[in-house]
Length: 125
Image 1 (cartoon, rainbow, N blue to C red):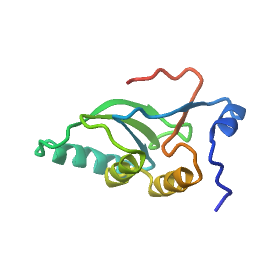
Image 2: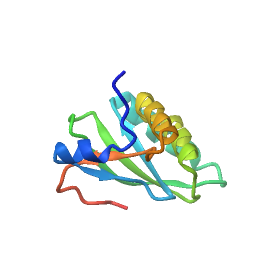
Image 3: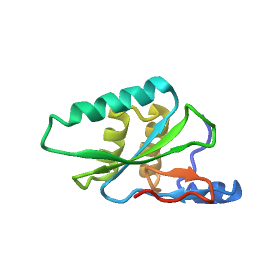
Image 4: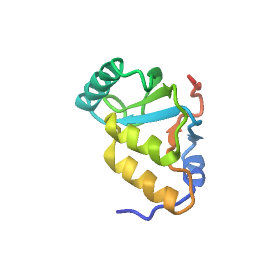
């Protein structure tokens, strides 16, 4: 496993990307396969029967790796802690390695969840 930098911003800026950080109500789902995307859609449909929390898809972008890799932006009706965000993201099908590294980054004092987007990216939130 590569060395984990608690601050991902310098590396992203060197690659010409912008760092996107979540707000208190945001979930960032990193999709790596069509199967993971379908899993996410099924979980979002399942959530419609629960009144405790509402999660809505607000945007989706193709990741720099190309399809089927996607970055999916979700909005929750509930604010959440960084660790709760990571747990929900993993439960919704986000890349498990990414979520594992996000937990480690939190323990190193950095931001947990981040996305790296192209410079011309428009925030859907």
